[in-house]
Amino acid sequence: MDSLGQDEQRVVWAVVGTDIGPLMLAATRNGLVNVVFHASDAVRDRALERLAARLGGRLVEDPDSPLPAEAIRQLRAYFAGERHGFDLPLDWSLCSGFNRQVLRELASGVPYGSVVGYGDLARRVGQPGGAQAVGMAMGSNPLPVVVPCHRVVESDGGIGGFGGGLETKRKLLALEGVLPEPLF
Image (cartoon, rainbow, N blue to C red; front, side, top):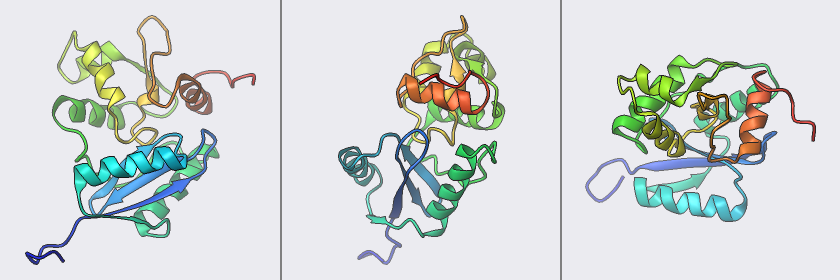
């Protein structure tokens, strides 16, 4: 409790090793709030500073806390090819407006093993001609992998950009059978 008798915001986090490198997972009482690629100590520390600034409260490393533990279990199953979607509560507090609308549509409307173009996703949320805005929304996705921004590609068949790096995007699309496995 804080000095006003309110429950203090608590963010629990953990780092999990995956086939695409370490991911940092952070959760609030409302759900998974952040997934961070390439979670070396320095990257993790910067991500924790950003979370503290945006969400306030205490940040506690606790991989055994129920939500991070379940997210880790589901991510391991996903990377083992045993899970094709995530069933986790999500805390959307790190995004709003158009970005949130686009990310929610992506999470619910683009299944495992499929891709969607930036322009197609813009049309789905009622913004034809908003392909660049969709690209910006993908770049600001606080929940990559779980909210599968790797499934958004260019309409001409190009892979498009990716906050986790193009090799990571290729690996995720290969895992889902969209691209062949990288040769090396």
